[in-house]
Length: 629
Image (cartoon, rainbow, N blue to C red):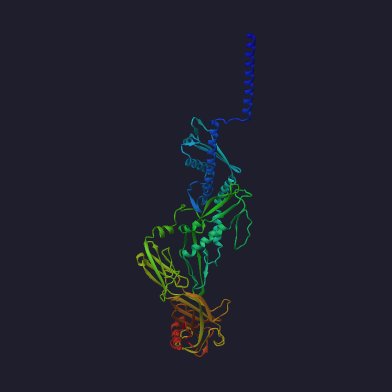
């Protein structure tokens, strides 16, 4: 009985063990098929937080590189030029270069971005995270076709630290872009490339253009005045600058035209950089600033041709203008991998039409600005009218060297001037210039009247036969003169006993305005452009003033003087026909001149003038109408 009970127990135990074993096998097999999630732990938390910070670094790189590329490698430019929405750093001026540490700027920018977006202690995924900004640092490696950034910012997540650094790489051509930019700016500084081509453009500016800035030359033609004010010249200087910058090309074979040259650059620092694109721009913002750095001398430019010597009817005046100005060139280099342009500025400095030496610091105004803007503490109002009282629009008004401006449709211009005693000048093309000396308080409200200039004046030369009687043939002084016949054209040799007659005329302003310098003597001789004697002279322009007029007539073959005129003459506005009646003494006491006779003496001019006036019914021997017929 006991043995049977013992056997049953053993059977039950064995069966239980078998059931337990089978259950274990089933449980193990289920675990192999379905693994439950591991509870969160430090490694996964660190990875998640680190990835978040790296993504923030990536965002910072994009944000800061946009600034750095547009601002000449600087986060906060120190010497800059406004270009579009950005201030672009100046890398070079007057041969001196200052190239920023772009790697450092990138690192500083990213750390600043992180500082703006992270707090010293904040929560990440339910965990308390601490950032130790006191120990922050970076490594930025600008490599071929990439930039590698490593940010070291100690980060503690509760009781453990995240492994450093936070590392990001960006595909970019910044290595090539910076290498080109540094070589370019150093070459340009050493050769003064932009100054050189600016002067070349200035020298070859088109004199036919309405905004042509004169540099050197000779103004010819009696009465042909060249006048240029600040408002006339500054647009031309801007045009020269824009033309120069627009015609600089990199790695391009431009069409070469003598009147439209391009300034080609094919290598910098001895390298050609194939595939790298670069372009150049003049910042529009500088249009409103260039006047602060612009001067020219003499200012204003007034060139008045004068007779080269007495008794020679050739008027000319050499001139040379010295320009001083500065302007920026924006150099842009393409980063094809980043799809951005890297920009920086080069300051071009011209002083007295030559390479500038930057005696004025960048940002320092010119002498003109100092006098005519900073110290312009007095008011001026000038009203300009013509001789009939109508307003003259577009008249250029200046005081000392300070440009007040152009008159409006009412003939009025107002502005600020320095408080001093100086010259007021008013110029308008087609009118006689005005100039006089005033105290500043005298032009607080002043009216100026301008007269119209006479252009394309024709002088008609008429001759009257004359015979001298009594007196001294050897001295050329006679008791009386008798006029007969005429008047006839002075070139009618058949009428004047087959003599070819030369006439020399001089118009000398009786009361010249020395403040303008435009009232000069006009001399002319009756030869046309082809060298033939003529009875009609063409004068480009004459001022509407009173003149002391003298004229002489000579025998072309012998050079013997045959008559003189000496009188005064006033030319009115817009009068362009002048008639001159000249006595031609062909005989003395009924006979021809003898070979050794000196001819009529100049002292006889007054007497001959009176005789012609009487013969012409009281009309003077020079008039704007044909009075003696």
